[in-house]
Amino acid sequence: MFMKTCGIIGGMSWESSAEYYKLINEQINRKLGGLHSAKIILYSVDFQEIAEYQKNNLWEKSAEVLSNAAKSLEKAGADFVMIATNTMHKVADKVKSSISIPLLDIRDSLIEEIKAKNLKNVLLLGTKFTMEDCFYVDYLKKRGVDVVVPESQDREIIHKVIFDELCLGVTKDSSKKEFLKIIEKYETEGVILGCTEIGMLISQKDTSKTILDTTKIHCNFAVKIMCQ
Image (cartoon, rainbow, N blue to C red):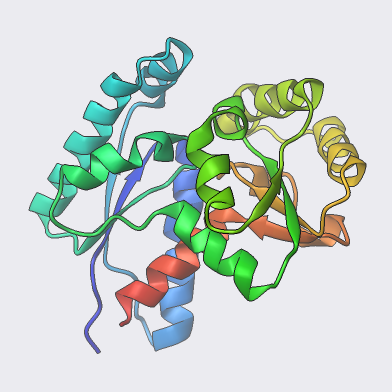
């Protein structure tokens, strides 16, 4: 059967990008069998550069880097592009406008999943940028999703663990306990793992609440498009 080529803008961090590559390939093989693997073109950026732009509120600069990556993926033959990180969807509109092929927005795939599971309210975990900026929370709320954002102290804990540990491939039991404590603190039916690295630390087996792992959801969305 015909398979579309997926273009991934990765490296933010490479830990989660590796998971994207693995999950998409596994799902394609399960769907098609045999020795089938996914047609993927990966453009991996230097996360240090992007992190500096984030830290200094230079989002236009990061948008330029990601737009150039998207254009390179289109030129290389990708049928669509996905940004393998939640935070950088802050510049999704600029990236989308720089190419003529579709951009698979992680937020759209998440909303589809939340509605399919009929969840009344969800807790958002992610970087401070994702939890505090309107590009994510407002996007979900405008589409009928009731989003709960952790208190300031909890946001600091989550952000620090993501950048100081998970982005470096480090998982600590102490951090897992902190995350689970935060999850149980808020009365929501679901929990958005709104950073593509959090799935390294938290999974469905850790809580009775419905876990919405954006990495897995985004990959599922991509595979569906690839096989249409």
